[in-house]
Structures are given as C-alpha cells and as structure tokens.
Amino acid sequence: MTSAFVLLFLSLSTLGEGRGFRQRSAADIRMDVRAVHQELQEALRGALGNGHGVDHNQISGANATLLPMFQSLPKNEHGRVGAAAMRYAVQRYFSKSHGWIIKGFESHSADMQVKDAGILGSKVPGYVEATLEEMLQKGGFSLPDILTVVIVVERLIFDEVARSVESAYHLNHLATESMLKSDSLLMVLESHLIVEMLERHEYDEATHKEDRQEIHELYPNWEGLQDFMKDIVAMETSPVLRSGAQNPFSRSGMEVFSFDDAVRIAQRISNEYGRWGNQECMELRSFLSDMDLSATGRVPLANFYRAADDKWGFQETPEYLRELGALDESSKALGPQVIISNYAYGMSNCLSSTPYYSVCCLNECEGLLQQIEMQVAKPSATPTEILDGMRRIRMTSFTVNAAELSEQLHSKLEEIAAKGNGKVPLHGRLFAQWLHYAFPHECPFPHAAGSVRAPTQGERMGKGESIFVEPEELAKRLQEGEVQNGEPLSEGVEEEELWSWDEEVMHTPEPKEPSSTSHRAHAFSSLWPGIIAAGILFAVMRLNTAMSAATKQRLLLPTTMKSHDL
Image 1 (cartoon, rainbow, N blue to C red):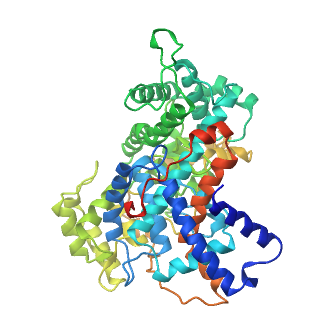
Image 2 (image 1 turned 180 degrees about the vertical axis):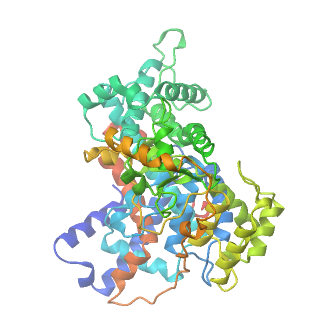
Image 3 (image 1 turned 45 degrees about the vertical axis):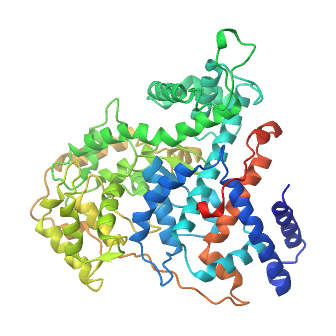
C-alpha cells in the first residue's frame, strides 16, 4: 500500500476520533497539504500509466475535442473557467465521443455537491479539502485541468467495466485466472452486456438466468448486438492487439483469452456501443420527423401513441415523458406534444445504464454548436458574427440549411443580444433555445436547470413504477387527440407560447482569499480539484476492494506517464 493510502486511512481514522478538520492546527494542515500534494501527483501518474491506462492518442484526441469548446467558454483574468463550465465541457466530451451521459454531469443537474456527483461521489477527507483550497487560489480550471477530469472519469469507468466483467465470470462459474475459448469468452461478454443493459448490478445468479432466457423480449435487438459484439471480438483478436497468448497445450493453436483480454474487449464494446446503437436512434428521429408536418420539432401526443408499431413502442406515460423533458404542454390550442429531439436523446432510449453512466443517442446538436464555437472562438458574439460564421461553413442539418433561416429567427437572435448588452452568450440557455427552434430535429429544448429529472427505465421499474401508459388511458388520449391530427400550426397560435426568456449563463470563477471560517465551504462550493484528487484515490481503492487478488495483480498500472503529458 502506498503512502498516499496510509495518509488516507490515517486521516479518516483521525476524523473518526473526533479530531475534525477545524480542530487541527495550521501546522498540521500545512504539513498534510505538502505531503498529500506530492502523493496525489504520484497517484495521477499511476492512473495515467500504459497498459490499461489512458494512452497518448486518447489524450490527444480528447484535447482536440475540448480545445474549441474551451476557447468559447467564459474565462476569468487567469484564462480559467468555472465549475459549471468545466462540468459542461466534460459531459459534452463524453457525449460526443461515446454517447455517454455521465451521472452527476447531466445538463439537468443543478446541484454540484460532492454527494450528488455520481461517479465522483465519495467523501472528501479533510486533508484533500486543504489541498483543494491551495490549488483553487489560481481560480478556476484550465484546459489541462478539464482534461485531467476526463482522464480520471475514463479511468473510473474502465474500473467499473473490469468489475462488471469479473462479475460475469462468476455468474458463469468461471475463475478469472482461467483461459477462455471463444465460446466461453462470448458467453462472459453476453453476461456483461445483459447486466449493463438491464441495470442488474447486484450479483444475482437466478435473476441473470431468467434475464438470459427472456433477453429477446427485454431487448428486441439482441441479435444485432450479438453481431456487433462478435465483430469487436474479431477485431480485437489480432495478434498485434492481444495481450494474452495462445495456450501451448491447445490443439491446432486454438486461441484462448485471458481476463485482461475480456476486459479490453468489453471496454472497446463500451466505447463504441453508443455509435453502433446510434443508427437506431437516427431511424427513430427520422420516423418522428416525418410526422412533423408543421416543422416545429414536435408531434401531438395522440399521434405519437398512434404511431406505435412492432418496432417503435411509443407507449411512455405523459408523466414519464414530462420527467424526460420531452413533453411540451405550453400551448392550449395544440395540446400536449412530444418534443422529438428531447425524446430521441432521452433516457428512455438509452441503450444501457451502469452505476456511473448511461449509453444514449448521440446529440447531433453538439456537432452543430461545435462548428459555431470554432468560427466564433469566444464566449459571446453579436448576431451578425454568429450568422456570418454559420454561413461561412454553410452549416446545415439533415432538415435545415442555416442560410435559409427565417427573418423571425434572425429577429429572435437580435432580441437575445439586446438582453445581453448586444452580444449572445454561446453557452447560455437562450442561445440553446434559439438553436432548438433553428434546428428543431437536432437540438433539444433546454429546460431550466433542475426543472426536469431524467430517470432511466431501470430506475423507474426498480421502484415498481410503470413507464407505459395503461390501455384505458391510451384510448382516452387517442380520442382527445382526434382534433389535432398533426395539422400545421394555425394562424391564431403565437410562437411566444412555446418560448421562455429565462436565461442561464456560465459565470467566470472569482478567486477567494482563504479564511478560517470559509475553508470548508469554499472547498466544497468550488469542488473540482479536490474531487479530482479524491476520484484518483477512489479509482485505485476500488481496484483494491472490489476485485480478487489475482485480478488486481493483472490490473496494476505502471507509472510511466509524466505530468507534462497533460
């Protein structure tokens, strides 16, 4: 056990004896800060090692994705962004790269407290708070800081995949030390996917057996997913990529696979699962868009239910659609409508959900926004700068040409600028809302922070709550919807009914002077460098507590990456 963990356990022990953070002397705190700062840097280098760590190509790719985003985020005099902007950038990165929605980073999460941070939800000991306070004096987060968060989250997700694969071994009565033939490897990977898709994260052999028997009913596209998995296995069995070896006792050089191989393949499946499943998401969105005769990005709720068939369920209750943020009830004339983009990107259409993240449809709007960010390259711009940038790149979606945006949308952008001293914040809620009306089938309607709660289907079902409408309610909804029948917006209906002027912007961080009374409050409100440190320690601790000794031995990380690689 490294000295960092010795310090961790000593700190927790001291706090447990009643000697809290505020009772410790200034000399003790300074000593801890110096010692732990060095240990945390060593832990970070360990988490970034080769083998199962994050390699240089991943870092370069992440940096390329984050850079244009970072350039357009509001920054203070030190060129740093605030916690909300950092969280926003991290979530955008994972959504664009893998279709992952990281729990604790969702756009609807208003609370940034440690206890609600999902993947980084461990308690921060007093000495980490002291380290955090020291690091925060620069005020905010640089691009390397955001990249560090991305790397730590990827590290934690890899650990979760490794834990899930180990459980899959046990569910199939296999030892992690054994070498698997192809059929056994596929069986383990199937178990891993079933557990992840159905959110069965507690070890339960009987439930898993039932899930295997019913998987075609629970997940109709199971055969397609099996083909995708086999394709990944075929690509990963290249001698150049494989970490394992052929069994010298096998006949005809039959390939066998180690636990390391299984984890690596499972990780690649997780990385590419979102993009593979996105084809179905695009088909769903296209199907609903064809029903949108008014081109508003909405379909009447009754028509939504009426369109259900063997492929598309479309049976979610209005309550669940409301929780997803996919139900527009603002127009009395039109009645309730399903917002196509919010529904397509919603948690109900996610492919799977783990304790730390969900694999969901790729948000096409983020690609459109990134094009604008690259053209503008600053936090806010005039309407002319934005529109000229969109024209320069001839920005289009699969339904809209930016060069043909209506005068009404031009005027609306001017109104947004008038409320912001002549400029439009690129990452404000009003511009996101404008993008929704400009590109209604790609860009979701931005609800106010904290106004919606997007549970997964598994979370609702786990509480015994049905997410599907009852037959009697369905018949009533269909009857009520007869009068709308998807007709275009009537002349008597004002668009203002569908628009909200509530603005939310990302503020630049303001450095604070430390004080004895605000030490802990400032650490938790600013949050992130300390969570990074806690997350790194937590990642390695999980390897030491959640896995068998043999598994841990194979997953030890070399410490070859230097801090300047960030």
